[in-house]
Length: 277
Image 1 (cartoon, rainbow, N blue to C red):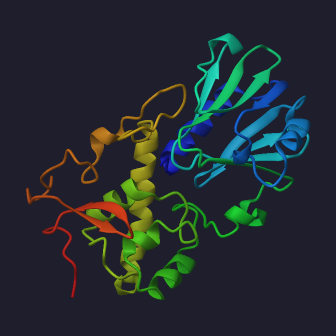
Image 2 (cartoon, rainbow, N blue to C red):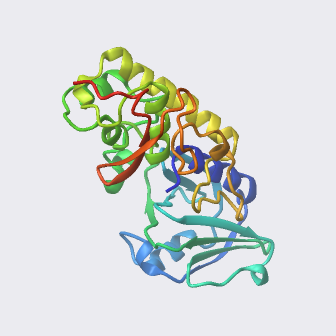
Image 3 (spheres, rainbow, N blue to C red):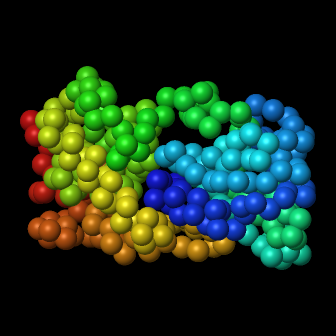
């Protein structure tokens, strides 16, 4: 699943390729991914308009339309955008969900092999008003520290599970949760309420640092992530723990262990990340 760095890379590419072009046609092949309104409502509101700006809050992509509407897009597990110079260049597969055709003949296509992605249209550029995203917190460098600390200190959930909760902090997924906790030598199953205030502060700082570095390297591609036009990221070359190819801890050479925390495959070093009793 694309996490915060990967979504930021997608947003950059969208801003580079699709701004200020009039949308000539929107063809929707898989209607169930277009939520709240019938798909013809999306077509009525989008065709003839322009994308003025694309941004994100956590994993949610928000595109500003020239009619004052906002198109919300969540990639979920396998969503991908691809840009083509002409409709004839499009790769037509069963994963093709929608095509945005522009007046200059260029095309933006959305593919999703798992079909978990989703689109919403709203008049508000604020996910707090959007029902599926109303509970989302801010990103690690913007989130209210005291609110995060309060949520963690009142929870017995494993710290890995908690920092992946989008209502605590936005954008952290499975890969980066492992990387953050490894750097701080925190066992992923540590009850959240056991963390000291300074440790919570460090989690947010390290999360910001790691995800900024990943963003600079185009994100992480382990299984299938491709940011735009089949382009893979390179941060997997810098991962310290979350990779099945890493057999021994890069710090102490202890054998890396894999467990499941809330059904998520989790890599950690049993020596560096001891579970405090």
